[in-house]
Each structure stands twice: as structure tokens, then as C-alpha cells.
Amino acid sequence: MQTRQIEITAFSPDHLEGAVALSRQAGWPHRREDWQMALALSEGVVAIEDHRVVGTILVTPYRQDCATINMVIVDETMRGRGLGRRLMEAALRIAGDRPLRLVATTVGLPLYEKLGFHETGTVLQHQGLVGEIGAPAGTSAATADDLPAIIGVDRLAFGADREKLISYLARIGEFAVIRRDGGVSGFACLRPFGRGEVIGPVVAADIEDARKLIEHHIAARAGRFLRVDTTAETGLSPWLVTLGLAHVGGGIVMRKPSAGDVAARTATNFALASQALG
Image (cartoon, rainbow, N blue to C red; front, side, top):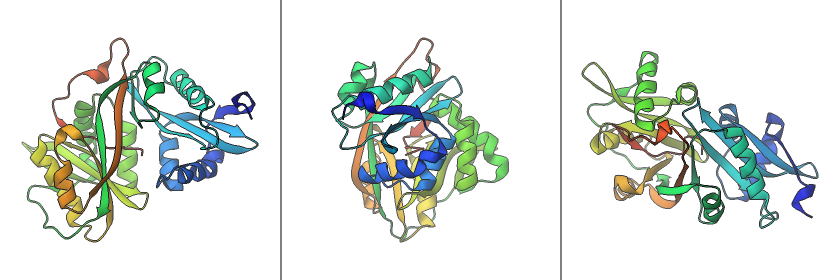
């Protein structure tokens, strides 16, 4: 069957069950709730063949600053037929003139490069059952009053306004913070995801603060299954392994800039990479 017989249509809540089935086929851990979160924050399309979801893609906008492309899946029986390009072209139309970010697999890399994306780094995924550790000094649980400060710190580190995302995470998860000079200087979020929970995003003034924020959540989760994504350049990967979080995979960080790319500026804070939606 040719891809011209496949319908590309707007992603709606009616497609969630099909999306979950597709992600399971791909070996992804996403629950229906994880897809619901992604869809609530995004706009996207699905590919439909015979009333079955055979492809997905979402675009998560952060105002006009930038957008991320995520949840890109093509049914294994449909690969090699140009469906991935059709999904990406639809995503580019949704994104408009925003600068774009995504995390690619080696399989998807050639297509993304043809569409103007370039490699900027590597994401390393760590997960496992964590052991007992002591609670770090200098961290505390965030309160509702801290949310505006957390949003501000995140905006500075990420280079875009993710207020909608951070507010959503505050409803379903919990934040740890480090306070200095009367304000929040760093934070880490913990939320349910997949087989257990994920720590991220993490934003801190330096690598030591980032470790403390991660330890804050791990200390309260002995024996639990946790996931943390980081980037190769942080040097955190070997340390995460010592905490019981094995390196199990990752991806290639890519960007597609645009004129006046606000999100491409250098952040003044240390930002630990995390698949906030994946």
C-alpha cells in the first residue's frame, strides 16, 4: 500500500489509544498519561491507514521563541515509504518560522539533515532502580510561591519561555529548589513517567548544584525506578551510573535555526538536558 493512501490529520484525543499502541511497538515506555501530557502542550498530526494510527508527530511551541518536535513514530510496516518526511513536513508547517529543536535517532538523522537541522550534541538516557543515599544539604521542596521564580530561571537557562510546560509539571509532579541570595537559583522536577518516574528538567548554577538537586529526589525514592536524561558534555553520566542509573541509550540533539533565533543564545545557567515530554 502506498503512502498516498494514508491520511494525515490533526492529532486529537481520539488518537491517544492508537498512539500508545504505536509507541509500545517502538519499545517506548510511554503511558496514556504521558501521551496526554504531550498532546496537552502541543499540536500535531497523525497518519491513519484503515482507521489505524500508523504515524505520529507533535510540535510543542514555547510562545514564538522556539518549538520542539517530538513523539515522531512511524509504524514499522510503513517505514521506507516516505511517511516520515510527510509527518515532518506537516510539523514544519505547524511550527511556522520558529527555530526548532529535536532529539534524533541515527535512523532519522539523514532526513532531519536534509530538512535543515544540524547536530548540536548528544543526549544520554539513564535509568534503573536507585539505592539509598543521604539527602543533600542546601536543597528544599518547592512551594507554590516558588513557581514564578522557577519559570524565570528556566527561561534564562533554556532560552525560551516554557511557562505552560513548567506549570503543567507543577500540577502533576514536584520540584526541588536551591535558594541563594533570597531567591531560587536552581530547580529539578520529578514526575511520573513510563515504568516509574523521571527527574527533569534540571537547571542549576553549576554541576555541583545539579547533582544536589538530582540527589534530593533520589534520596526520597530508594528502590524506585527512575530515569534521568543528561548530555555528554555535562560529564554526569559516570556519576549517574554509580547511583544505579545505567546508561541505556540516547539520541542526537539537533536544531534548525531561523532569523533572529532567540533560543540559540548562550544560557548563563547550567541546564541539564531532559526530555521534558519524552
